[in-house]
Image (cartoon, rainbow, N blue to C red; front, side):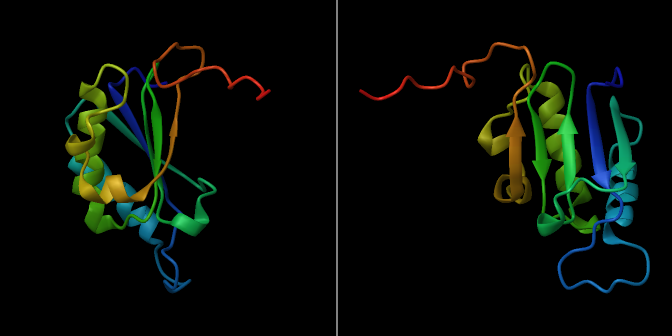
Amino acid sequence: MSGKAVTVTVCRTCRPEGAPREGEPEGARLARAAAQALAGEDAEVNAIACLSACARGCAATVAADGKFAYVIGGLTADDAADLAAFARAHAESADGVPPWRARPEKVRKNTVARLPPPGRAHALVEPPPPEEA
């Protein structure tokens, strides 16, 4: 990844459901606001043309090498502080799974997915269950 403690990637083309199609997308505003909220910290903020989470826009990811990654939806530029707070909690956690209460409510209620780090053993990841007899 980036060598930073955490990387936040925001869908810059996201528009919340029902938002006008003209003008700057809300996702672009969220990306800018997240970058400002994390300025000067051990974090990288990027924008991407689409995260394919359109039904849950605006969407962002929070990830770091060797840690669980998250997809979070239902965000607006006004939620940049919550996104930044979650990015900090993610960076501080050893495995990318910050305590539930350390996650801002907006993040807790709008997490779309938690992805395990490829190739890393973790108590949350186990083999498929055996067939039932």
